[in-house]
Length: 405
Image 1 (tube, rainbow, N blue to C red):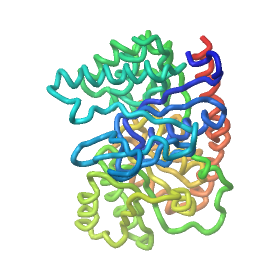
Image 2: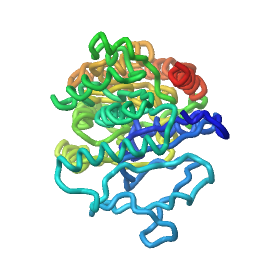
Image 3: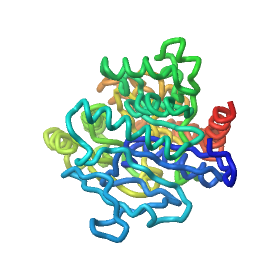
């Protein structure tokens, strides 16, 4: 649509709730930066501005305090009043538009639902992108129900287990009624593709995540630190609680010099800290919160654990494998980890919510340094499949094909 007159750049609008520090958001930021640097026009369309967000290279905007020059209010909730300077960053860089309703625009529930839809349609009319790329659950439904009405092609991406993203009758109904309008559906695993009805599977393509370049490096070969690490949101789905129990049982005899180090934050932090205290291992379970330069914190560790009940294609597991750390993962439904790990070859898979199996897997690696090293070395070979230049080219070929079609 934008390829007229003075501008021949293809324009991709990327739609997501915010750029808060999560796996899907990180992938979208990576893709936005890549496509921009390849000569595309890129606009990020988000519902709101989160308190803590990923930095975006080439961003045209900056967050500013209220009252600053050129400050524009983009959210006015009591929890997060947010102001930006839309021209405070790089000139002609990656743009950003917000679709949240301000308080002055809100009335009743029915009105607000219609107003949000109309505001999003107005954004698409203003931007006139060649393609909308949408991430996650309700966003995908909103993109398809608005942008397609403006004649704009939409590619939606399901970033987690579809059962998580469409976990209510309303969401699943919305998905079934709108996904047929998609120009393409990007999923993370074979299991996720098979979750969809046959008529939608025809639209599906499996595209891996583009891993952050900081995780592409030579494998560390020195003595490994006596640390077992986890990275992710502290919540029930990530199930750090099970790992804390398994860690105690696996190290109770001769491995009490090992520590379980957990990176990330979330609603279960206090509960998990209390659990470690109740098990008498609080001194050996460390909660590091959100950290920068995650690769440096992970690469020398003895092993990495993912214990989620549900996942799509977990970034944290991909990153740990890329670093050459021996990994244990739960065998989540929809097959994300199983698409990455061949059990016993480049990692270990254990059943979901199986504390005994997790304990045995941890002990197996603690008891056998040679096996641990071999698994880590084999895991690092994933770099050839998920290196940014490889994955980004796959995304580019796919989206270019959609735009030309």
